[in-house]
Each structure stands twice: as C-alpha cells, then as structure tokens.
Image (cartoon, rainbow, N blue to C red; front, side, top):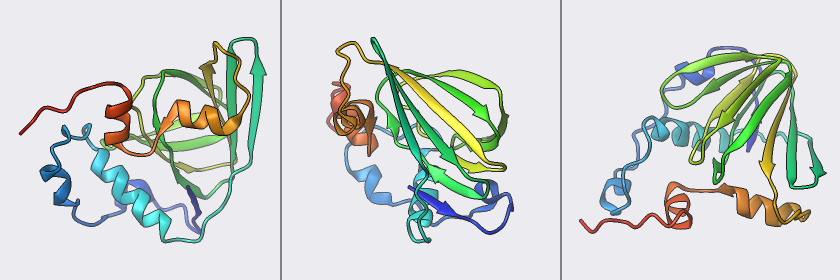
Length: 169
C-alpha cells in the first residue's frame, strides 16, 4: 500500500494518528510488538489517501527469490509483516524507515538481515530501489503463492501461521 505525498515533511514522525483500537486488547491476542500500533495507524491514514503503485520486479535463482520495488521520491508506504527472515538491500536512493519507535534514514548502498515478524513504514526522500531476498528452497515462481508464504497482513495471522499458541485470558 503506498500513497504519494506532495511534501517532504517529517510525516512519519509528525503524523498524530488516532487512538489505537482498544478492541485489540480485549481480543486475547498477545500484545503487538512495541510501536506496531503507530505503524497500523499510519497504514490506516495512508489507505485514505490517493494510492500509487510502485513498480515491482521479481528475480529467481536456484533456491532464491528476490523482490525489488522502485519507490519514487515523495512516496510513503507501509510494508507487510515478514513471515521469514530476509536480506534487505537498498541499491539506490535514500529512504526514511520507521519501525514504530524510531525513524532512521537509509542511504544506498545498504544491506541488512530482517527478522521474521518485522513490519516497517517508509518515506522515500529520493527515488529508491529496495530489494528483499528470500530463501526459496522449492523454487516456487508463482508470485501470489510466494506473497502468501512470505507475508502476513495482521499480527494475529503472523502468530497463527508461526504456530504460536494464544494464551487464554
């Protein structure tokens, strides 16, 4: 999900959001990772804005899948929850990344191992090329199947799919 912004304000730090949905706390699902509520509020706000599709490219090698996204300057976006560890590389540009607690500016070239359960928001300060590389042992090439395997839409979905059992209240 992405949204074109017309200003380079410190959107990720300044966006006030709305009160977090308290029904989450009554749902019996373990607490969200620190700061996740801020990212979810930002995602809800961006969903109400005009949307912009960032071009994707997909690369395959034996046992490897790489998903590359081009993020034009001025685009804010929120990623999915990573189901599996991946290697992230920024090969072009500069992007502010918000993990729910702090914002850091990443400048190419940059590479980082990203753990499962991660979800981040970003604001491209310049045109940015961002890639995630995943192990792909069965050499799956169906993008919809790979997305279903590698991402989760919600924290509850992530927990259920990682076989973490919810504790009764």
